[in-house]
Image (cartoon, rainbow, N blue to C red):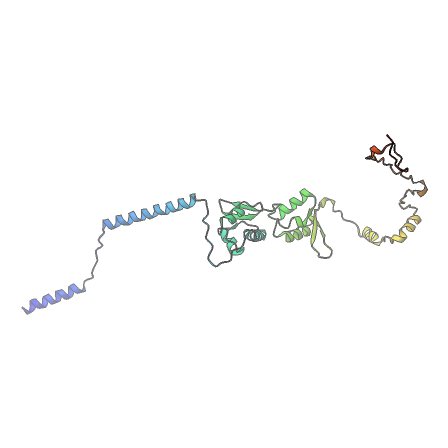
Length: 278
């Protein structure tokens, strides 16, 4: 009996030392439910995406209570002023972040922005860009524009390109344009195209001779011209003799006098009136 009990204990000990393997049971109902829920979610996602794609009208947000609302004109000015400083189209999020204007805050503001003659609106990308008089995107565009117009005022180009001054300086250093500066402020005023075919090198002898010539003062100019055998321009003015002036005759006006006392015709008022005897 003892040996049998001892064998049972040893068998249990060996059984306890054996590794345990778990068997995975697949529930077909749960798998089908997961697949159906995944397909439903994808269908719902596609419907939402299609709805957003079809929907063209923006959702306008209601103003928050207690906030100070700016007028439409002020917000338009701030948006246009910001768009002038950048060359790339801006999204509504960028305008809200940098220009402090929410384009969806009111329907009136949105209509004014999308139909403004100073703003280019892209409905596909929902972006806003400034519409300048001249479309300048870089150095080549500016040079082409100046060559077409022969001369351009810088103030007319300021709104067309944010890096205008840097580009003018670069083109001038390359010798492609000629620039006239304001003497007091040193700001470019007018730019001209420079045709390099006419740039001829001049000897230093001629340059020194040119700079050595001095123009005489105004009061000495006529004398210097006479010494050189040249005549100065003379302005002749025909003098009018006051005696020969023709006096204009005053027009005689014939005034018509209306006689109202016609019943006194034939009566001498200097004599005393005596009634005729009957």
